[in-house]
Length: 127
Image (cartoon, rainbow, N blue to C red):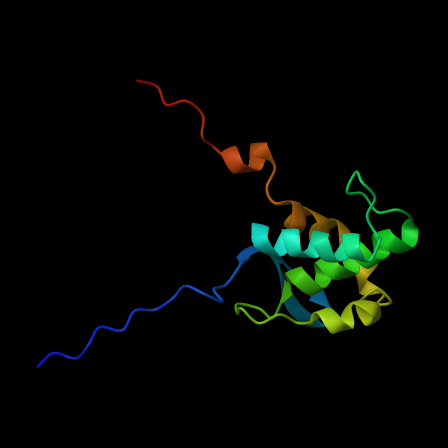
């Protein structure tokens, strides 16, 4: 008699690493979120009236809240699929001094690779 096959669902998988950063003496991974998580974040920011119709922050405070939301979404403990923060901590995260230091990397991770980065070395192959 053969044991039944157990099939695994690929849920909760690790996100693609964008960059490892050190914050207050500890390492953390900034990871690229999948499209579904990006859309959820944008919906929450819209509901909070932080984004205008052009999907840009309505003012400086909304911009900082957006970066804090992205930090919550993109910061992971190194080499894991475990986030450092949860959504309830956005208010605390936006007051942290390190947020300004890594905001550009967070924005890049959220946006994903540029067309040039995605192409990489995919030049034409001589025949």
